[in-house]
Length: 109
Length: 122
Image 1 (cartoon, each protein chain N blue to C red):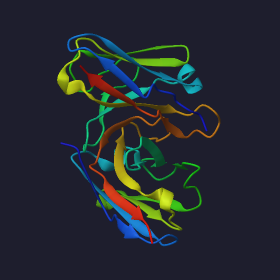
Image 2 (tube, chains in turn green, red; image 1 turned 180 degrees about the vertical axis):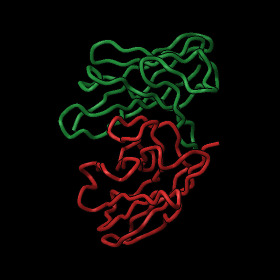
Image 3 (cartoon, helix red, strand yellow; image 1 turned 90 degrees about the horizontal axis):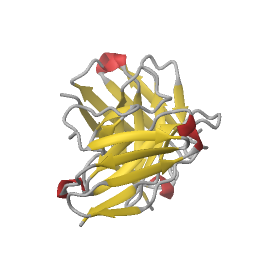
Image 4 (cartoon, chains in turn purple, red; image 1 turned 180 degrees about the horizontal axis):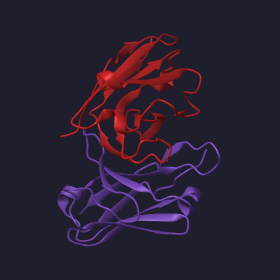
């Protein structure tokens, strides 16, 4: 099945901007969704589609896509943004499964 | 408010079976596809299975195909996962998740339950 590749860990200084990326062939055809997961909690959807935020998600979260790479950008990272972030998408390899990236641990310094 | 409450997890021996349930509320259940997603201890998210709004389309991850069966009862606002021939590698927190669409195969998950823990061990 298709794979989505994420950097295992990223860090950002408080108040700075950070980009978390997700790479995979399926992203040439389908948008990624992004989920935030804090320790001991269920994931929460933060970005879906071209660049859509669910109600309640701060506007410092944004999404973009180019070629085989989707990106989640946090502009002015806050301490509460420290979490694991996962991308997901539809598989384009023929199985038509749903795939998740391996996740990125974001540390806010 | 969307609520998804999983149940049925527990400790089970390898080779045995377990049935997970998910009670949904706060939305029109039969308008949306549903999924099961799991997370092994300390690991990432793994999609397990999806089912369309009317059960007409179903998909499974290769890792569970032939062993797990997803189903739903729209009259009871409930989602199920029958897990047979369980293996140690099936040990995980199993999340019930709602899709934004009627069909599952875009994986547009927008809400998650809190999960139920399945431990496969002798």
